[in-house]
Image 1 (cartoon, rainbow, N blue to C red):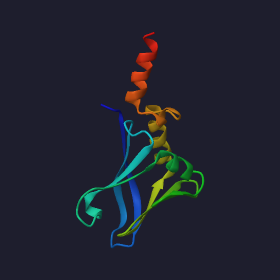
Image 2 (tube, rainbow, N blue to C red):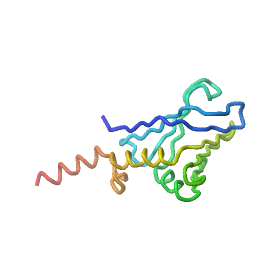
Image 3 (cartoon, rainbow, N blue to C red):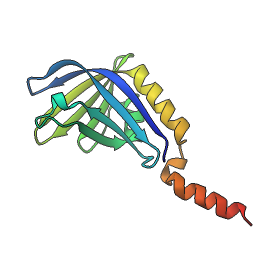
Image 4 (cartoon, rainbow, N blue to C red):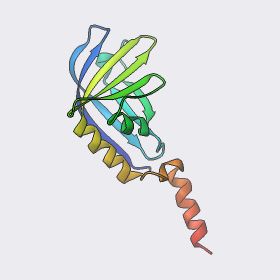
Length: 137
């Protein structure tokens, strides 16, 4: 089983739907998919009462902590020293979330401890198999 990092996070959410205020989301990182991070929103904020999961590049989250960054339907930017904004666009609307930057940095640090930069281009299982093969000779 691949190592997984999960971090609950209290966020402020602002949407074009009637849901406003604070809620708990879950930040997820699975080393089996090392280039990607996920933000899982609880079912209570979705239109069909199921968890909503947004996936995007780990490098987008990292760069968005320093400077406004975007990739497709996801935008990330610093908001002062202590907050970071994540904005998600879908056909149903836009969700704007405000995270504590320190929590996002801690989450990223855990993901890099799990799969360091440079090793995220290759699935861990393939890398371990290649390492075993090369060390047998």
